[in-house]
Amino acid sequence: MSKKEESNIALYTKYRPENFDEVIGQDHIVNAIRGAFAAGKVAHAYLLSGPRGTGKTTIARIIARELGTSVNDIYEMDAASNRKIEDARDIRESVRTMPFDSKYKVYILDEVHMLTKEAWNALLKTIEEPPEYVVFILATTELSKVPETIVSRCQTFTFKKPTEKILADVVSSTAKKEGYTLEAGGAEVIALISDGAFRDAQSTLQKVISFSQSKKISLEQILEVTGSPDITLVDDFLRAIAHKDIERGYMAINSVSAQNSDMHLYMKMVLVKMRAALLLRYAPKMASIIPLSEKDKTFLGELVLEKPEHISSRALSILLEAFQMSGHSSIKELPLELALIKILNIEK
Image 1 (cartoon, rainbow, N blue to C red):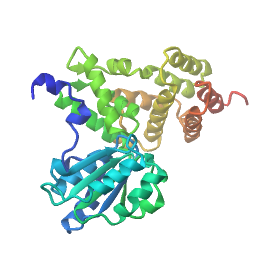
Image 2: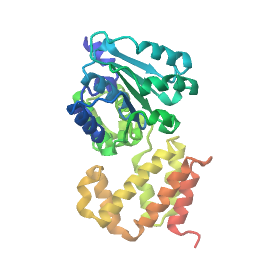
Image 3: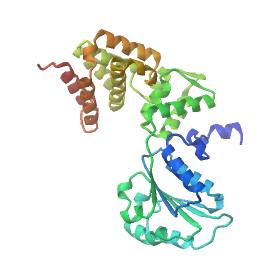
Image 4: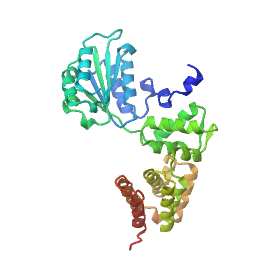
């Protein structure tokens, strides 16, 4: 493969784990499957459920590979676009033929919650009692929509969203492999934006890299390319709380809105920093585990020393409530504006 061809490959494809050793953040699943395989126990059907971008398809392919299945005997189907009873009947007919050159034929069905009721009924008996050489691996983001009759016939594994620290580490590692260095705090911003999805984190990093003119990518560049709120506006909002300066708080909120930045993301950034400030106030020895730059830690440390009484669990609870409300408000600024009034007790 030429360098040009390699550069056109999506990062999440280029660095997709090829074996269990390379899987990150899903140890509970990897250990369980490895243990079963070591004992010679192979289930006839696996059901992988969890949020998008957490590695379900990747694990499915690794399972097939660990079973020694060749490419010719792995069948992948997107159930979202092949959801009818005719598609299910095709699978039912296909399983009757022996593998080409492997011990197992593996069927990977993605987004299985999209299958019609008729399709599920057509597959039920096949999934319950497939030929001994067939293994089904079903993947879904919505387990509740998979019929209980199917769930009960599968070995089910639930995927967890990776922590922001894990995501940030993956982003930093990938950037380094590509020959780039991110300024402190940059990987954390990308992790925050990605909301627990490895695929989104890698895609966002690729977007940032494609716009960069230098091998050293600044935090400012990352914020600009991703359309993330200016971090100084997060600091301004926290200063407004610490100093009971409601005008400053409103100005910060208004600036985020004027920049057409994501208000929900801004509130999440405020929550992350307020939580970090609380940790610095009540458990300063935990400072090393806080996923923020030294500059941010210094700022928050000074804020806590100046006005410790205003950096409180009460304030964080109010902000958390506002964050949860923000997805349901037609006026995107309103939940945070109300939270600011409540925190500062302006109405009393």
